[in-house]
Length: 115
Picture 1 (cartoon, one colour):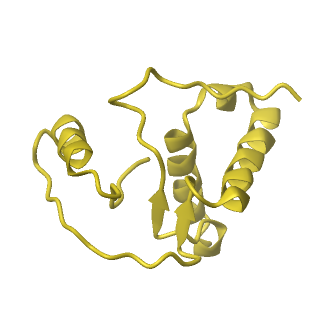
Picture 2 (tube, rainbow, N blue to C red):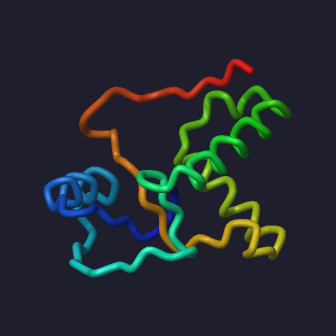
């Protein structure tokens, strides 16, 4: 999902695995209490925000077939970059993302929309 802060809820093993794999072992792991608010994009427990991201993915996929092959993390990195380039932080107002990391546990999941 690009350059960001990553949080694993109660999963230090996954944090270590990801840090070693993605950062070549050059990473830090901290423990923190995080309140959930509007600055956190919750792709695990907030159905409204999940539907928001899926609807955006569908909208872009209808404009360009290449978006059908993008992973959710790639799409989110695209949205962050687009908001920065447009100098409109409100276009992607999230400071953190709660998501499920499948990279170590299941094969790549490809999302397709047949509407």
